[in-house]
Image (cartoon, rainbow, N blue to C red; front, side, top):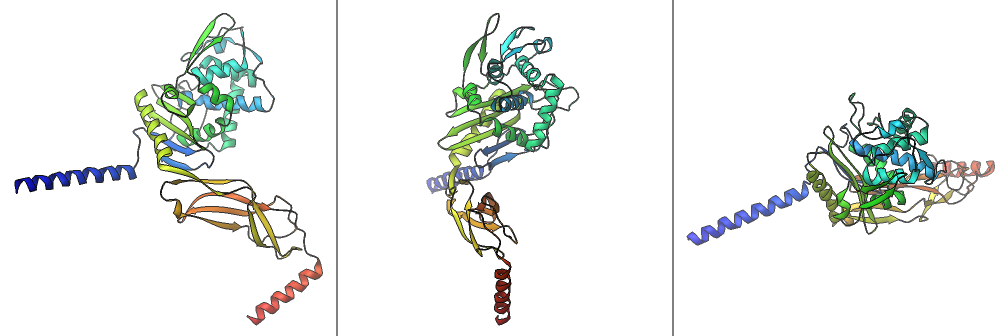
Length: 386
């Protein structure tokens, strides 16, 4: 009898432990003040925690510095081989730096590499001055670009992330995610961000660049993106990793220690890669038939899906996905090829996960006057008979 009682108690303990594990799995969390996790191609948010809380971003600020620079490279305004003259102001920067000397010249590409790998504040200032002419002009550019991207809870006062006594230098996990999504598009940035140690030839010496993100040596598929740390900001990290066709971006803010920052980032990425799957719900060029165009020369027209449509869904719940077509009300001819007719929407139950434009397959002309009169008569007779 005593043995039976012991077995019963053991069974209850095991049941409670297993139940707790299920609850924890359903209520995922990370031990940091603010965080977010997204899949890049779909833009879907997989997890968020206090994602709109305004916090000092420390050197994660440099994502915007790098983004503006790479956009300028892309449009041809600057080139990676451009020689940048280092100013006394750039030389004076504290914190992480590669100890640039005033009045020396360093290639733009080497400065951007130093920012990406070693989070060099002096290089960040030198890049800002080279692009905008003055440092204050570049900070204005940063805020303008933030506005364009919809980073509604961000204000930059510098390009480095060094503490601002005014408290006016801040961002949020969600806003950082927005600019990180843009920056990860650049292969060159991801290539630099994957380097662990490299030596950079400066005019008077070699500088050793050591990556501030040690997770690139620990987490499979990680190739970026930017760390940050100050006493005020705590330990921060915007990370990106790719496995298969899925690229995730995680943002962790205000971790207490470096270990906490890394643990939270690993937990977020593992949660996304292990718990969710990426599904294609439509292919670019898929057609949508029989779209009504009452005043068109063709009363029913054809649309096509403007781009591939993917969604992220929790594994095992793929059968909950559905699609519906949502057309613009009162479509009227003439319609030009490529004009938006509506949207193809993906739902999980009642929740809208993603959508893509449906556009006109070709030009559609307006029906002539007599055809429109005849259709009006036919419609009137049909309504009367009903």
